[in-house]
Length: 478
Image (cartoon, rainbow, N blue to C red; front, side, top):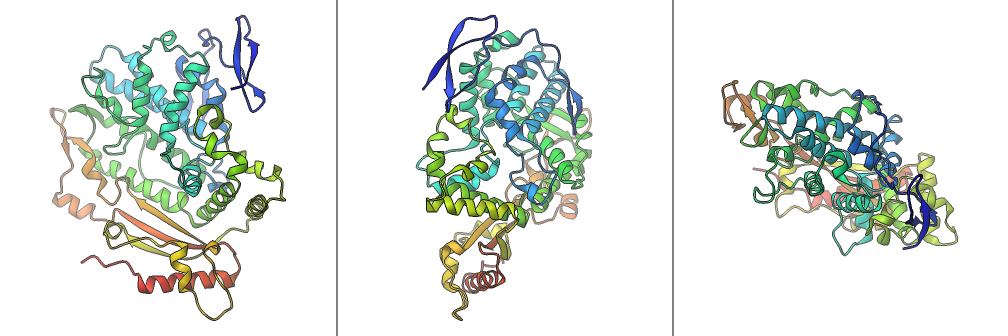
């Protein structure tokens, strides 16, 4: 790793790494005497964060989140969907601190300031491992690279946090925390509750940042409000009301049973946002184009190397889109990527030729298998007008559900009854549930897109997909 000598103001000389021939200055000392910062947020209004947060915020690794769109290429359809991962992270940190303080005080915990800071930092740093265009990078670009190792943005977040602490000399003990609390922060992000033998901290705190039990956490509470506001999509849940009806029973975060409709509204809003925004057909088309372009020039971008260590990874942001235009167009793969990006800017998007909806229960059957481009093209018409090859079409398989696959999400939520209840109980199938909640809790959409937006290619792709469906129609549920 290349280094050079730098001197922090009032501090000693030290060796600092050089990022792609661009030196950056790590914090020599945490900012203990900083004036209070007040953030003005379009969702939560004015608020402050704890000093420990700014030890991480004032780093190049975190500031990169300002250059990552929260919703990938959704701004192709929703022009105001340009908010960043940084804004979302600030909101999650705020909610994490507020919710944890409320619950810790209700439970009579003594170390409330320290424990609430742990949750606050977990919320702040939970997304530092996201790549360019957020979920597009992990779910659509990297699968095209045929990685021979597992990679998730959650794992990269944990690596970056360790790297930030070492590189920027962040000492948690300067903020009223323990050095061992770094492990707790990382486990909150991973959503893995440590065993009672490993920590004596309240286990219900692990329901707040990444709740794998019922998926109701501060991450969801922030992104649903923020994304819907930016896209001007009306939601039904009252996110300001629910926190007043949260309690802890059996070391789990529970909700007042009288708020069951509000809880269910959260799950419905999640499905609504996926159907309306996240999986919108033109958003999906734009994301398919971005993933094709980045995958085409991945050797020139050194993606395989850069995703394996935080030092190189933090140089990746949405600006990678412009890097394609700086490459030598004499290379066929570069020329192809540049054409795709120019078509995207001119809104010459891939066109959805045909889409079918498959009940999510069907996808769990061993006999069902989603199609690939190679499966579909043999079923094209023989009229000779268009000769489709697999590269002419893209298959997008998207899941729309309520947060628990195809299951009823209410069964995973714990509720409490009257003020005198001392135990939580899971939502059970009752006459009331049969009347109100007998819904399909998920579906799978299989869409075939024509890379050439001409009507002839759209028609040929649609006919080929219809031919495949005729012989490979999903089985019916009896």
